[in-house]
Length: 527
Image (cartoon, rainbow, N blue to C red):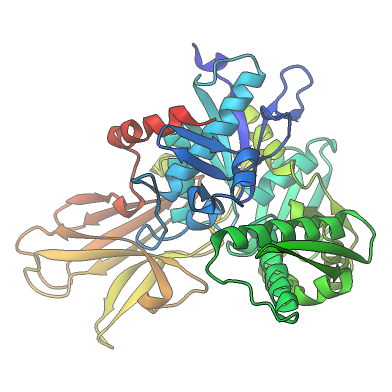
């Protein structure tokens, strides 16, 4: 099959739900492809029924109440963690990384899409996959790994609010506007300021929280349910996984009921210890108990607005609400009150996938070239020639020794909010005569720029051997290049002798043939 015949999809790989779309050849519009349940979104839930039978989607979510120990969900929250801190999942004696679990979700949505188009489920496919805007090097690299493990040709990794903005602007005849995209999904929150003109999108600023989403509202209701039943003299077990799944399921249903219907309250029925416990949740109580969560999204929104102002963007034309959790009435009311602007609930469940499909179509037609290598010529490309201009969500630096203070510090080489592709170079010196080795430590900003190593995320460390006979303070040039996907490439050069090194970030390990072979039985068993 030629590359032109290979399907190319846009995929919203979500924390709670995933969605896949394609740019239709006839109308040239993005179309969401239904799964085998004829639904437009697929729950990002995996049920490991047996070593040879893995179920992804609605059935897996439904089974979670009965067999929570065999069900994996919210895996995306682990995707942006340091490899040493991220959870590993074990089922039937087999261990899975977050990337491997995510690859099974991708395999399901892509397989269903291929089948819907009359193709073989195992056929090769290309894809643009979305990530939260604040995902740094770890999260973006992990997402690309998940795609490769799913046997996809990953063309691009695009921030979710950018994809939503592209989808919004697609049918608006080149209208120039500045959008604030408020993206509250099931498991993550993003806010981005995006300048849009026709097909061109320029990210001005963004912020977000990978641990904040609709599920946090659900968990707040769960705590409230426990308190209510405790008030009846009944203590619900804390270590009962099946009970916890029941509570979360009932909490989610109550939240959706209050969001969809203009009602003052909804009833929640909990089955426990052979008895039914019926309690009433008012909309007022729900909004009050979750106010602190909404406050967090507003704080992030203000941070993004301040960053945009620092870049000279002070006026917002439109506010887009994206993500299923934006259906909660309190969200639109609060955002409008804070910003003084009307909000638009824009295709909350599908906008991100549709925007990714538009970008996928542009890449497939050769209208949008991207750099996934970090090479010099790509890094030098003019922003004016690019269809999408994005930013580094976090600063990137290297550990250096401050000779005056005697302390190790993080020296930033590529600052936060640098336009992609970005590059930076700094020169450091050896600290003693005939130094034979240096331990290179590569850091990414965690919450705010800080010179303290402990307040940054260590991406990678590796010793490199230096040429013999170097005098103290011999110059070593360090270059960071960040490609279009926001993935870091590191190059070093000893300036006097010319020796060079390219740092392999093996903490962000690459997919190997062994990885592909080991995951093959799981991948082929996905249903």
